[in-house]
Image (cartoon, rainbow, N blue to C red):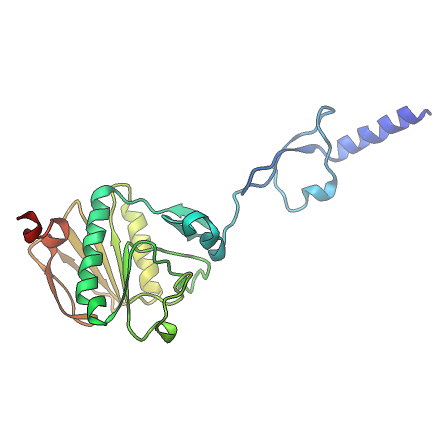
Length: 242
């Protein structure tokens, strides 16, 4: 038998043994596989270990989120996957109103720290790799180690988590977040809905309260002097309009 025929036989046997080939490899994705043919480079059996013929998503970790451009701005981490946190124009305005409110009645009075939508929390016991970013959050003074705000994710649950509902949010998505916060022992959760102009208040003791525009928003355990009309979250202050 000639060397060329022997080589051809070995190639044929290898082709039958390894029926898939690498098509491409893109960042964040497993290499795709396609049926083998003489026109494509054949891969070794060890190249296939741990791979599937179906393209798989990359699994991210909390440090990965921080290493993304702008530290993963607008992204949360759930089940190892990046989840975009969508916020519309009016919802962003309302969230900013809440930040100002908590800053005035909490942070400026030395009661604790206020964080906007990029304050990230890695504090969920059922999934240590989950990272959530409430639209607004508050942590009482004395709870952060050495009273220092961490450069990365905050590893303790906030004392207040605020979610402002955007048009693209579903009731299911919002409810999942609320239950995650409560399971992580967040004592107070506000769900602010700009469309209905309401605030749903969830407390760690299991009680739930729905506040409408004419009601007063309070949180005596965190902000003793706070008593603010719910309607004020959805409009400019009267002085600004004048």
